Length: 83
Image (cartoon, rainbow, N blue to C red):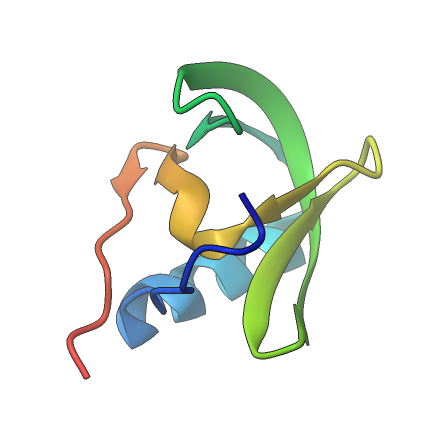
């Protein structure tokens, strides 16, 4: 799944994720796993970082999710960025 091209998320959504990190509260995260299935979890967002031109979200459980695998975070629908 890491061999597929990365699709950046919308910059406004990125900023909203940063706000959620600063709030340090648990929120619902829905993402696509490696099998393409939707997964729902509760977690605190800890960090956003970039590695090899791919952006990732780190959760308080140490779990890491590619930003383009996110579906919703705290009811915020994640949209791709049109470049």
